[in-house]
Image (cartoon, rainbow, N blue to C red):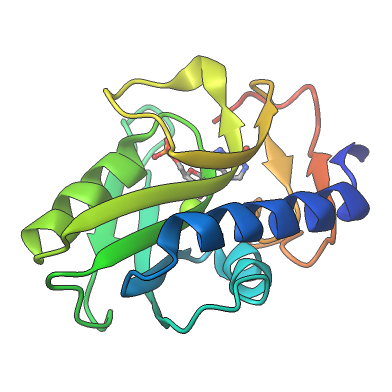
Length: 174
Ligand code: IMP
Ligand code: MG
């Protein structure tokens, strides 16, 4: 597999993002919310580069496709996440592709009373956006290729890889 972003480059960038968020969030009460499953490794590294006190939790999102020809249905659950009312929420996901996941989650977090939602993604496939939203912070801009590693999967495989790899340049993006 072709390595697109090395483990070292990821670690350096995650520390930079942590420092940027620390500056932005100093003197605010905030909650870090990761989007399962893909963001679990990114969130784990990101929160360890932020020394400000905060609460943390997870929401889940998955795209379910019943048949190859059907449009993917986005399933979202915010059950079990910490109370966000009146707080700044930092919403953390692995990758911004079409942007539908973050748009829907941002809407639901506001509906749950969040005062402000700041979005952070490790990767941004800039060419694929279909919503009127861009991530507030991102680690790396990447081309429209299917990537795995550092939490991102293909059929629940490859999440453990410490780097971001292009799975197979011949596979279609979906
Ligand atoms: P969006 O709603 O289209 O922005 O999709 C975001 C979600 O799609 C991410 O949280 C990932 O779970 C998944 N996804 C999009 N592109 C890739 C990829 O290249 N590799 C693995 N998962 C991806
Ligand atoms: Mg995901």
